[in-house]
Length: 90
View 1 (cartoon, rainbow, N blue to C red):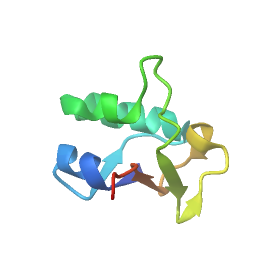
View 2 (cartoon, one colour):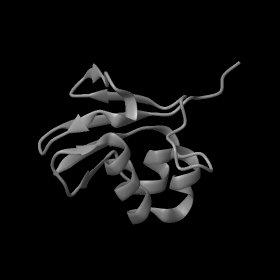
View 3 (cartoon, rainbow, N blue to C red):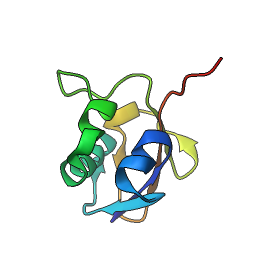
View 4 (tube, one colour):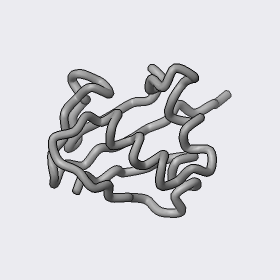
């Protein structure tokens, strides 16, 4: 299981701070696609563009460190991926 730590709108969509997705040795993109399948209500549009690529503004951390290869970064069971969305301010 890979743990996704959620913030902002994703936390609202899931109704919780963390969600686990089944899998081992998958990319972060694959883990987030599993999340989007499970929580369909708006999550796909928040995470992915029309071509199915992760929005470049989504910040990903694996076990507290920047995901070196972005959405292609491989994660394994026991890893925690923090998914931070851009926020508007002013």
